[in-house]
Length: 563
Image (cartoon, rainbow, N blue to C red):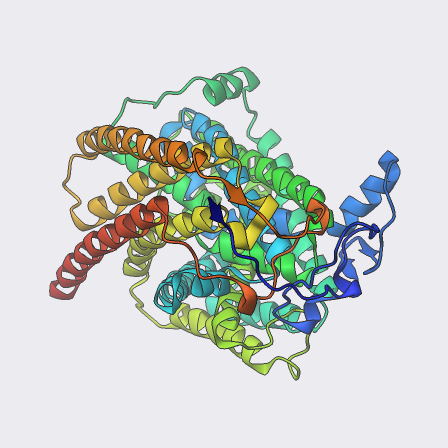
């Protein structure tokens, strides 16, 4: 008979208790990375007191609580419809009409599953994503993830300022004016020292996203065609390498690595505890639907505005799309699109930069919190300021290689996304980290399929970046076959491991704690992670993947250097 060893427990601070204590429930101390993460929840639309244990039975009371908590999920989702997203959706509509709308519908469960796991990790552990990776997998993997995230995010922030330039140049504003003003605005909003002020500013961007609604009706859309293309998969003109790559671009711009780091840290920074997880889940689900509706609207706008004109099938960039809408729908349509692009660029730059600052703070121990002023957290805001100023500066350089930067963003996104999602899945199955909050079997099955598909899409994207003449359709079909075989083998391995585990009796001597009060104990008290078969397979596969991706990127770098 195997006995699970006991671990010492500390008394939990009353200030961190998320619900009413009971006589039989022992208390736990919640690990908190920063003292700023303890206190009232101060949201954009309300406040929940630190010691609030009130039961909320009426719809009105629950709505008031939701309004106070809502934020991280909406912001991370809307922030993902950034300048690159607007360009990608515009290209999809301008080149393939509404025939690719079904791709967006498939992305809703992907977004919800990924980000729901992040919500639980943030609320239950009180530790940022990068810090958890360091503690459970080693500092090598943590620094690899953060450095890769830094490079990818920095280059993506450059594309956000390119979007700012395209948007305001539509109104005749020089980039030497628009880009510096945008950079200063982003730093000023973030360094206010008030989480509530920052979140309210982000909601201005969120609400501005709804400008796609009047633009959508200006394009005179056909509801029947949109409904059909949402539910019936198809590709206008048939499958081709270009269409497959565009589908991958839609997935990549909607499901991004920085989302994991951002929302987990933002949930912690907002002081959301397990008591409020269901409200944050609703926030995330609402955000997933809003981001897909916004993306679909942009595709439909370009599909119907350019149908039957010389613009159809000739996408250049988002700036040219704004000019094209002016010619086909009138000046108001072009102006609306330019404002949507500007808004997307600003919220994208804000969220991406903050995600990077959070991640570096996790590993360097800087006092990273939006509750702290610039004087109280100089390192945190220094990273934010350097990222913003550096990215803006590159856009202002005459003849900067912006095309190469866009290519690099796509390739690096392909490298980081699989590793980030694998760590996410492993952490959400770590008994010591999530306890009763860890993944259910059915959720693991869905997550494994999602992650495997993302890995395949990332490999296709990287392979086509390095070898532009590759037959994408054939490569995708072969990859899908290998993926199916791999998933079946992995499932069989796990089933065999579960049968073995079922024959072992485990005596758990830990005190029973209500799920709503269970939080991860201090990191110093955690046992070292057990070397399970699933963990070994995942890390081994990731090593193989990284070696392959590194080789491909080195080949591409050599080609660019030669050119």
